[in-house]
Amino acid sequence: MPLTDRDRAILDFEAEWRRHAGAKEEAIRADLGLSPARYYQLLGRLIDTAEAQQHDPMLVKRLRRLRDARVRERADRAADVR
View (cartoon, helix red, strand yellow):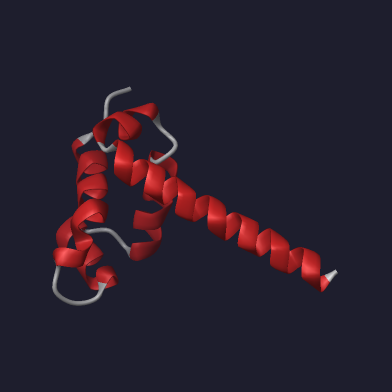
């Protein structure tokens, strides 16, 4: 299924958000009209699609690496608690 305009806007925002003035959460609301929680839900699902990979492969790879590192870190902390 092709990317929607909103999907492309989310990926483009994530690639460029550092250029926005102010906090990222404020920019998400102002630029995309989404709550930060909804934005991150959509982004998390989006980076697992082949269409997102085709749209911006470097961004998607970076975001997947960051997500995987966070998952490993949480698993390591959980293992240390036991």
